[in-house]
Image (cartoon, rainbow, N blue to C red; front, side, top):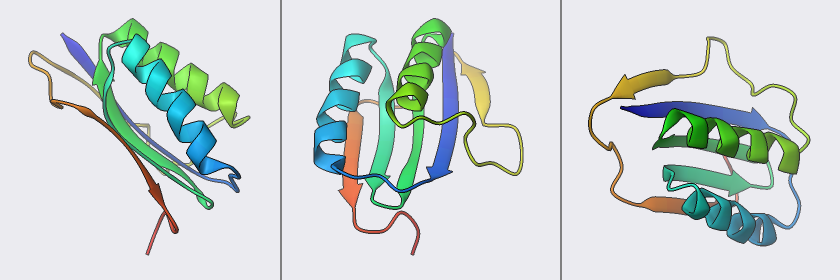
Length: 99
C-alpha cells in the first residue's frame, strides 16, 4: 500500500532553487514520488510512497521551512492505494504559487 499526502503553505520562501535541490534529494532517498511546487509565496505539493517515508518527507519539509501546520480548510489528503500514483518526482520553481 502507498500513502498519498497533499499539502500547501503560504509563506515567504527565499532561495527556492537551493531548497529545491535539497528537497528533491531527500524525496529520492526515501523513494517518494510526486510533485512539489516552490515559489517565493510558499510551497504546494502531492507526494506518494510508503507511509513512513511520506511522513518522514512531510516532517523534513516542515522543518526546512519552520512550518508548524500546513494551510488547509480540511484535513490534508491522505489515501492508501495499491499502485503507485506517480511515475516520477517533480520539483518545480514558479514565480507565483497561485495565479
